[in-house]
Length: 234
Image (cartoon, rainbow, N blue to C red; front, side, top):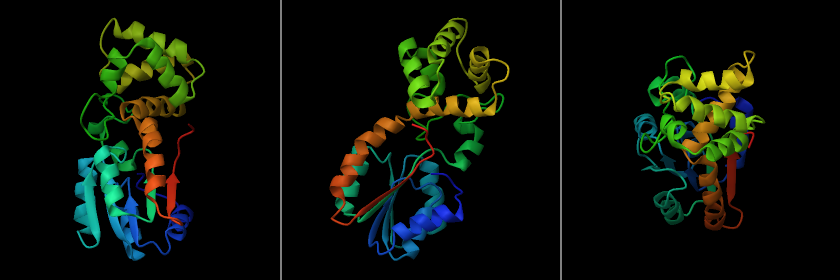
């Protein structure tokens, strides 16, 4: 869902989508890809779990040959809608958009004083809830599997130790955990990697992908295409 891509990447998506008649942009964002797919002549179903993304894309692109659905792409409602739409091209742009990162109210950033939220859909439990309540074993799994962190056990133990003295509420609380475990030389790269791990867990991103991919494969006709853009090391 990233807002900005290199021309090479956009050209690759455009090339993959040539000849498409019915396309699903399952991570609509601001609608850049959906608009491009429509320009190629396709009818488009745009899906996003962020209601503000749906509103922005609708305001920018209108309704001509475009349908909108507010849902996570792995949600049963979205999977049913995709099946009924009968696409020959499905696009996934995984991750978080630059606009969401810049919106401190969404709590994705590790800027000082930002709230720990990270909910793409703005409903359910956020990052602070996860850090304050998840069992130590679950936190260790998150840091190891989603953040490629070798010191995941120590980091999980440090979260549990600190939350016993007071709840996690802001980015500073988690940044201090990272610094305590990784040392004073830890910096933005470490923060981004481990905040990403929490974000993936909060939004059930990789489990949702595992649920959705077989459904997408089943709904695409012979010769249909699935394009996935990912920046996740996992």
